Structures are given as structure tokens and as C-alpha cells.
Image (tube, rainbow, N blue to C red; front, side, top):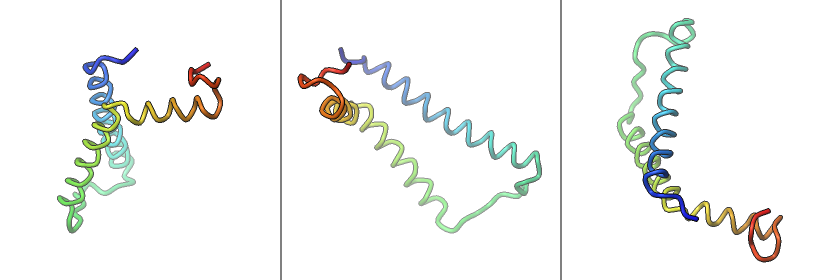
Length: 89
């Protein structure tokens, strides 16, 4: 039975926001423990790298949202460890 699109979008949105929140928490911890300096770090080409990362996250969300990766995983799992009719155990 396919999962409704609104559930998939909700899960992907939660994963993206959660990962951003976690990385921000790690940076805050490092600054509070004085492991990281408080001054901003500027890297040449930073906007290009950030844009590429955002684009990659969006592309991966679309790939995961369409279910093509999940279908491939189920088929390969069924071929390797499941019965011959392709159903999971």
C-alpha cells in the first residue's frame, strides 16, 4: 500500500529541519565550551557551496519522495533474502 504524499513530505521536511537543528546545536555546544571561536568563519565560494548543498538536499528529497529508491531497495532485498515471489518476510 503506497504511503500518502503528505506523509512523505512531512517526514522529509522533519528530517531536513532536524538535521539543520542538530548541526546548529553542535556548533552552539562547541562555542559554549570554547572549542570553536565566536567569530564567523568565511570561506571563499561559501555561497556557491551552500547553494550546491541546498540543491543536493532538494534533489535527494525528490528522489526519496518519489519512492524509486525504496522500490529498488525492496526488490533487491527480496531477491537476496526473501522468497522468490519478491514479498518481504
